[in-house]
Image (tube, rainbow, N blue to C red; front, side):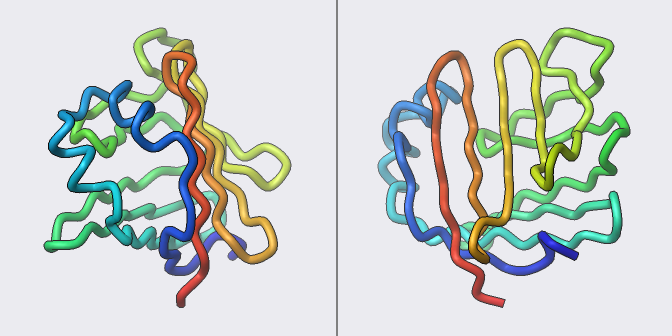
Amino acid sequence: MAFTGKYEIESEKNYDDFMKRLGLSSDTIEKGRNFKVISEIQQDGQNFIWSQHYPGGHSISNNFTVGKETEMETVGNKKFKLDLSHILMQVTVKMEGGKVVVDSANYHHTAEIVDGKLVEVSTLGGVTYERVSKKVA
């Protein structure tokens, strides 16, 4: 499918401010600044397994189906419930024009494939972060 593959971070915009907004400590932000995070995506129709692998063996993996409620873990190891009918970081993962979209009152995330690269844009509390990853497998 369109998203399936392994992607390595190629560039980031507004890393520090966004990670601070997530509540990560200055030490954690500094350690993560030059990490070559690998995003591994498996897509089977509307079903996704979206994993991020960090140096040192730490991984975060989220399974979701587009249009269905799910629980996700964020980079700050915080979990939140996703469901459109509630307010607290609760939405349903949607597919809009080829983009995976997560949207709530305080958080917005899109992911799409542009010229073979994974482009992710996240906005939290008015702070926007962009990450572009090249396909490595």
